[in-house]
Each structure stands twice: as C-alpha cells, then as structure tokens.
Length: 202
Image (cartoon, rainbow, N blue to C red; front, side, top):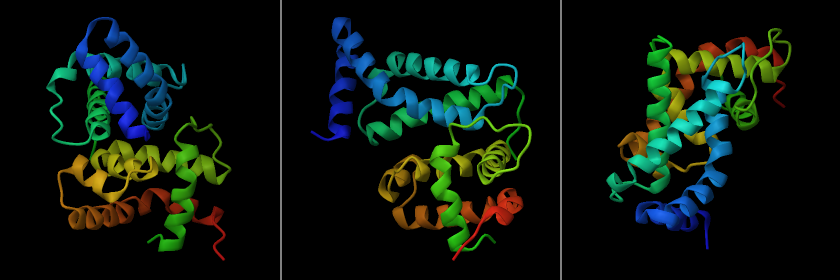
C-alpha cells in the first residue's frame, strides 16, 4: 500500500468521527508533522523562540484539517488539500505579523541550490551567513516574504511533488505549471545571487 493510499484511509477515519477520528488524526500527524514543520520553519521568523511559531502553525493546521474534513470532496488530491490548508495558515500568520508579500542563475546553478533546499528548510539561519546553507536559507525566506505564491510553488518542488500534483495546487494545466515554475526560478535569482560565490559547478 503506497503512502497516498495510507493517508487517504487515515483521512477517511477522521471523517468518520468518534474514536476513529482520533486514530486517523494520530496517523496523519505522524506523517505530516515533520513536513509541515520544515515548511513553516522556512517561512517564519521568531528569533526569540526559534521553532515556536512553526510548532503553533502545525497545531493550527491540524485543527483546521479536522474541522474542515467534511469539505474535502476529492476535487484535488488529498495532499494538495492538506498543503492548501497549511498554506492558508501561513497566510493568516503573515497577516497577524503584518508581513506584506510583494524579480540568472543558470540551470546548473539552480540545480545545485535546489538540491540543498530540502535540508535547508529545517534550518533557522544564524546571524553570520558564512556558508552556502545559511545564504540560501536566508535568500529563500526573503523570497517567500515578497513572492509567497511563487515560493510556495517552489516549496512543492522541494517537497518532491511532480508536475501533475503541483498543477492541482496551482489550478493550472501541466504545461502552464512547467512554465510557471520556470518563471519562479528566474524570480528567485536575485535573492540567491549573493550565494553564487559558494557554488562550484563542474
């Protein structure tokens, strides 16, 4: 049984309510909590208590998943629906914090950066940016504040979603999604430009 099927069965338990709901929530939480936390850690900034806002947002996301479980009708994949809720929670967070969202690395350069992003999303960048990881993490966070929709699309790539999944999130055709992702990569260039010196492409 693949991961998607398991998630679907656990979500159906949540929809059933009662004791089954608790069982489904626990199972879904074990799978998605670390993914959601990495996502929020990349996009939240609480220097006083690193990770606290991310933890709070994970809890908020699961509360909304349970409260709104009956509204899921299968129009998109379950993964898309769950991540959509996480994204909405992040938007609410930015509004509460009064963060206002607001444009070449070559292909090899982007690829080298993209390969680092999965690990980097869990990192709260230090004050001194003297490594590639620190530099990319800060650049991505700044990009997410100014171009949240595009940053979200790129975060889906980092999470391992293929184009067909991402097209569901974005409500675009697969061809349009590929073009959009290409444009997103160009837009993030200015934020990652300071990191070029850390790259060695052979």
